[in-house]
Length: 333
Ligand SMILES: Cc1cc2nc3c(=O)[nH]c(=O)nc-3n(C[C@H](O)[C@H](O)[C@H](O)COP(=O)(O)O)c2cc1C
Image (tube, rainbow, N blue to C red):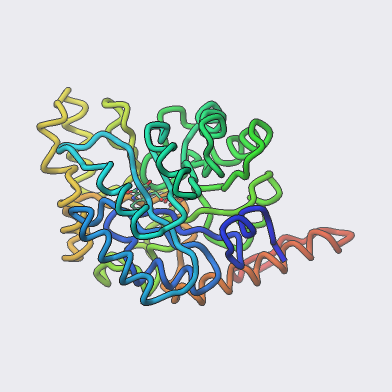
């Protein structure tokens, strides 16, 4: 069940993708997702240089013989990043799937295509999906406003962006942002997507790195506990609402420039929070779907559960003369 062009293109069992997550998408998580039938994606820039990415790719290969990808995020950074070096590493390592995000991957497409690398471009608007198709991307991942990371500047939710994108392009669309359970998977397919891409939900698994206090927080946080930062720089990021996030908002309100914010928003501060468990100090990308996170399962438990729920929801939808929603938590009638 649930075979799509995405499962065929990428040689995976289920249409479930783990999007690249800075500091989080390392070999253990990525291999666990791929071993469980999804598609795991490493984040290139988690590794300080292309050589270390090459070592992580090797490590991932030792943990899985299934396909996996590498994320290359094309966003402004404080310091120059050797994007060409990372792309060469992906190609030389024989990885055949790249997820790009942020700016257009056009400058890198010829090299990637010449090496038969399939490119998923993750974007936040229908016109960007069209561009991705025009420049030769194999699939687009559409990040709706709910998503963790960078939702763009237009605030259109997945519910609207996904069907519009599916109507606008012929390449497969992957629904990203706000997905975390079997109901979401069926909804994504109903909207015209051929897979879901999840970040926040995979961060709340046993194999994802992160201090136990961070994982606990993911269970207790509600859908109202995220906040949009860096709007004033048109580089909006959705993160957990905590004192550091409040500080960033305050500095933005006062017209602070990006250099004043560097220590608060630098990737290092995010890594510090993850490793120390001091959840008030540093920024953590989190999507609104965190409200649907109630436990920390293994990746396999999570994927099996999502597929089982989705099968039940789909057959319920198909067979019932009076539809009764599938509830995932007990509620009194
Ligand atoms: C902690 C964290 C870090 C992320 N880092 C990146 C990143 O470096 N590059 C990127 O393209 N997307 C990044 N994302 C976004 C995810 O790949 C994915 O698009 C997003 O989480 C989907 O929304 P969801 O969280 O509602 O599932 C990150 C997400 C999280 C939760």
